[in-house]
Length: 258
Length: 258
Image (cartoon, rainbow over all chains, first blue to last red; front, side, top):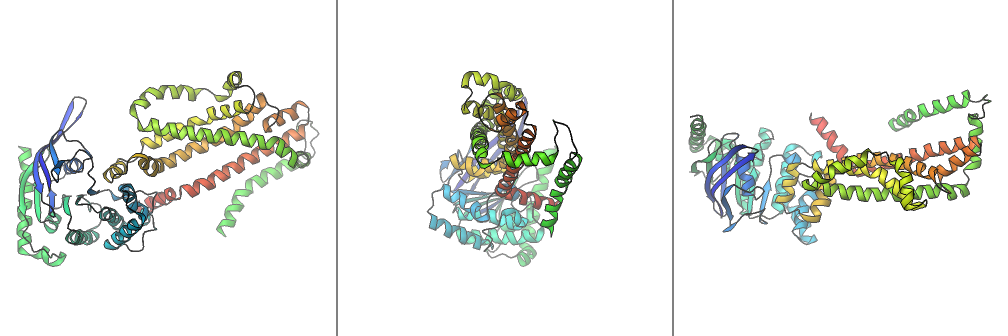
């Protein structure tokens, strides 16, 4: 279980202090898929960096499986928004996926197996020898997902992973994430600014306020587990849920103006 | 066809210049600028295998030793300085000071400590060409993308692997620029150190010819130096293109994407 308790992050440069996160508390159960959605500039990336152990919070804590997160935990993989910068351009696709496994001292035969199966899983069979920059944006983000999958994490963090790809690619990648989540039984924390995406993907949606950020509201998405782009998005239930999320986000924006 | 054209374009100007020199100098009566015809004859007579072994080989060995040492020191120290802010704050003014000293003025000083043997020449070369390598490495290391660093950390790529698989390749285009500058400085210093005090080597031989009024031979030595420099930089470019193929590809891909 992933627990975030009273998380607060203040950036200070000189005498100026910016409070990015004020007080965040939420939990993600094992095997759950939780979407964090909030207005743009609400500190989503700061939150994700704290959760992944890349950034030390000012106060509050993050616990993974009961133990506090002080650095990147071994059982956690991250998919960043900027796939073009997160994949190493000097390495082939294979080497990109394999490097974290080498660091984990996975045996060579097993590494080969994991690289192949994860590339298959994201629909990139046969691209292992290409360089990332030879692929389209959507394919590059698939490589980043394959790298995360091959890492065999218990927890997968995704930071607005599809913000930079076109709408059709985005729909495909959303279905890919749902399929992988169902198959691999990982815990997924998915950060997005897209309300539809949050409702379509998540089993729960946590709505954030504007910065300084608090949890605005939470919502269980009681849509059927089998979802598809055409029918789910036309489902009256889906529309009702997205309206509720939308209202909360609007409310969050207004509260900050006061 | 394009390769042929490229070769044709590259050779056109040298051929014209050479032909011009040949034609213009053909009737020259001057003792100090003899006809190119005479110089070429002297070239063939002078640079026989025995002389190549006795004078060119020692020069090249000093060059190689000095350059490689500078590469190791420059990249090693550059990585350390680039990664450590405190070290950078302490060392930067000193580095700028040493860099500003024209290396040839140090030849007499280094001679006092290191004598007039091969050691002195190697030290002079190292001292002259370590700076561009060092400073470019520092800059290259500092410019490593923050998302690249986050990714490496999140996936447990730490320790030696972080240096060799992430930071060094990321800085390599800039390091290569420093290496290229250093190569031409190394050739200059090889000649200069041999002119000061030596009993063999290219610089020594050219000065020797000049002092004994063997003017065509002196000119032939200068042509040989030019050819040597040209060949070395050609070899360097071939090696660079091989090692940085990913960087060329990445840049081309970014240009296409706009």
